[in-house]
Length: 369
Image (cartoon, rainbow, N blue to C red):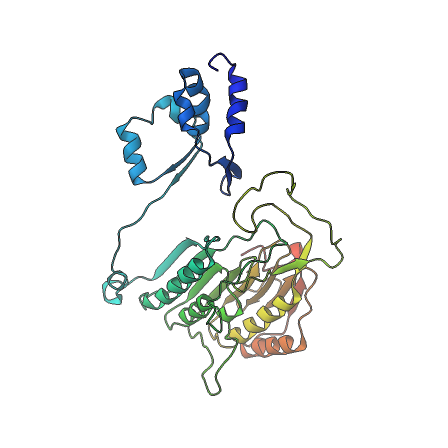
């Protein structure tokens, strides 16, 4: 075996790899099969195996200590390194102490988080729900709030994702708690990029006699919707004029799946349009919210997906004298109920009725955000 040429040894190693996993960040299928033992056969085998074993590293503090103790990370080996995944477990802390309003006078909060748990739906729901309830612990002094809590969509657009709304809940708890947080008296700017539904703007159901939401001092409000709603529904749907059996992407069923994650096994896409049902729901909820924002300057509801849709409402420094814009593919056709709601909003803010229907490059308030 030691007399075989390196090219043949590499081919043997490739056949020994029986399991791979798809790494989204580098867009590569990475071997999961351990090849470490084959490096001990001989120096020749070692020279062929190590470019595989040291190309991708999965480390944690304990593994790192072991590697240092046994001098695994030599310069020749590190020359093969292309990707490192390092798991860190932070020490426990007292959440109530760390978010005590008496200890902080913060005016700005910016969080970049990942809603990336796709294998365990129950865990994902619990993480989102627990996070949602921590918002009320943030100090009242906050004036600017920015949250990116991205839920990456499946690579297979024909896949129906599971709902991440708690089974016993009447609405998406994260959307509801974000809406309540945005209503704080001291909050002036609010930006969220996450998988949320229209209840981030207006409650789906209100008890008779209950007070409507209000945003007394908010001047800037922007919600960027992810491709998939908490309910599991896609914001984009297949174009009715598209062929039902016409797809794009890499989905050769003869190849092994790219990933073990449901919906990410293959890339499968089709030509799509923005769902008119979801557009109508969000456009109406945005109007209702805008009617309770006396100091709003800029209000945007956007989805920069394959088809895309947006509602923009601007009360200062108007672009092309347009205070209201609807954009989607195909061109939006809001219902009379939605248009009446927006007419009242425009009048309430002392503006002239000037609405713009657009898509793509014709939109004023879609790509310039």
